[in-house]
Amino acid sequence: MRFVYIIVAVIGLGGILADHLTSPSSGRAVSPEDFAGACAPCGAPCPSAQKK
Amino acid sequence: MSTASFVEPGAGATAAGIDRLFLGLALAATAILLVLVLLDGQPASAALILGGFGLGIAFLKAEFSYTASWRRFLNGSDAGGLLAGLLVIAIVAIAVVPVAALVPNFGGAIAPLGPSLVIGAFVFGIGMQLANGCGSGTLYTAGGGSGRMLIALACFIAGSVAGSLHLPAALALGGIDPIIASQYLGPWGGLAATLASLALAAALIVAIARGRGANIRPKRGIIIGGIIIGLLSIAVFIAGGHPWSVTFGFTVWGAKIASLIGFDFSHAEFWQWAGPKRALAGSILSDTSSLTDFGMLFGAMAAAAASKPFARTAWPPVRSLAAAAIGGLLMGWGARLGFGCNIGAFVGGVASGSLHGWVWFAAALGGSLVGIRLRPAFGLSRE
Image (tube, chains in turn orange, purple):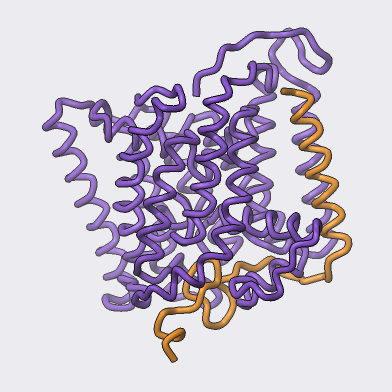
């Protein structure tokens, strides 16, 4: 199990590094709720907005 | 989770119980993440990582478990853990309800009420009992050295991507906009109503437990752990601008992995909404829930490795692993349709004065009842 953990940790950390270094710089960390029209933590719109 | 344990000699562990290899790995990984976000000039991101790190330690050391405490309550043996969970929410609410209502750039965890919320939370409840951990529980036990929960986490991630594809259709079933106490009663009236709802729930739980002759006193360690978790949750709220959430990060990780292997999300409605679209395109370290998730994983790993040889237990039976995998898938799918897990939807929702938090709790409790009944089929105890 330790070996599995080492593999997962190394691949995971490598993936985070690669993603961060190849993604556009975005400044402050945000949540989907920060965007206009978001009605839930995942950024889903409100039912009232969907009906329009 | 019960697993037969055996200790095998290996590099990195010492006789004192400190596993230097994994303690070093956890600390080095956390340091790397901190350096990356600080190089980008984002101290708030560093605070989120450290907040998650502290939460990982607190959950692991206090053995704070929503899943087990719900199961003990539903089995009629103990209500103490469930009450400690409400204590966490009360602490968080004292900060979140007024600040979200009064301070610009802060907001609560809100969500619409409708079939998607109820179905998602119910399915999540089944999954959390099969996997033996909710969102936070999966994170800290996987980080803490449980290979079984590492499988649950992988399936949680996969399930949440599937859920993201189904959420728009579930929302089309109907629903109403979020109902938030502070919008009707003002910030302080909303806080009073939120605390009153928690007191009412606690009184109801105590009455049910007393009627069954069950214990109603949380253990001292759970109370202390709950207070620390509540305070750290407030720190995460201050750093991130929203209550602590866990599962959106999993969805983003899964979608990024799926994109790497060729999956195209450009026609998926969920991934065209502004927040998810930005999260998928941007750095994973610019998503608030991912930052606390990474911190929690490595915090739990550090705490576990600092006290005993890390991940030295044997793999559990296949049936138990199957329960973890199925539970993870159900939790992931349910978390997307239900707008989060115990943390994002229940703790965050109720602590924000949002009615959806209580609806989520009721539906997930119902799902847990089903999940508890299914556990023996996978060789797991109902207790």
